Image 1 (cartoon, rainbow, N blue to C red):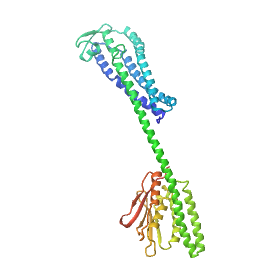
Image 2 (image 1 turned 30 degrees about the horizontal axis):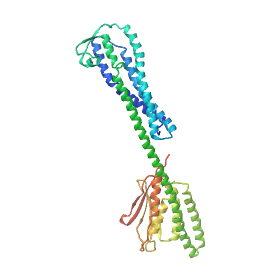
Image 3 (image 1 turned 180 degrees about the horizontal axis):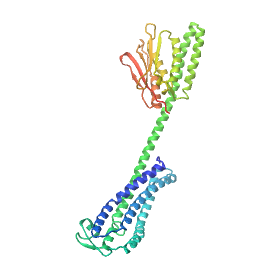
Image 4 (image 1 turned 90 degrees about the vertical axis):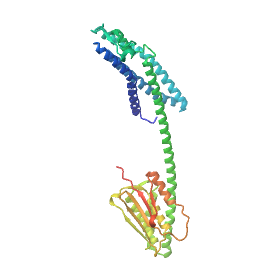
Length: 400
């Protein structure tokens, strides 16, 4: 069962209280009518309150006991029958039914012992033992007497007690016992079905998370080769023109960038400040490759620097901008990174499509969308209207 023991007791207690009050409601109304007739005649049956409390307590005990018994027997049944559902339910229902029948047979004995003793003690000292009572329409059915007739005190006592006594089975009490028993069993069956539904939901979520984790690992494996390939192109350009110092500086920057990328195997979320430090190092490498052709503008509110996002979120966006747009002296490319008041990090660039058609598999954006879905549970926003390609990334608040 998925619920804690504390919650089980709370559910059982609440259901038992409701059933006890419901089972006694009709009896309480009939008893009230009898007591009103008795008061008119000058009687005051103090012992009747004990019978009322016994009935209320008994039905609470009856309901709560069956509720707890069902939960415990179900657990034992799982161990005995090794989670064979039908056998477990049959075993549990059978035990509950046998115990319920035993308790129903016990109630007449308990009623006679407790109420009989109280009545004998009270009736001996009662000053109105011989008085008669005028019967009204409200109590005629209970006392089995015609309206406006007169009965004596002993008949009234029998009539009042008949509402609660089990001497007259099948009486309302037998019906109430059966009603409570069926309600408890149906309630437990419903809770059982809800538990099973919750288990299936949790199992589905577990499988979904495992699937997303596997996808995440595969997607992260795609980033490193992609980035490495692009970086080698920049290094190749420096080597061709023979600039030794810049080549060494480029290699130093490249090692720092790769150090951050390698951390992505051990981290999931990072602060925006960390991500921007990496992007600044990475844009330096791109600046060497596209000197005076590629420009970056980073305007981020200071309050957003400690907000979090999936690691390497900006890398595929910048790589895609460089890959799919013309970058030349005549058509320089400007990439802007900025935050908004809606806690979004926006990366945008003017669309300058290359003349040759290239097959785009969308690995970068699919990677980013998959990671955001798994780690953040939110979607990125992509817009390419008005000649500007824009991607908006939700930023997460820091958990304290």
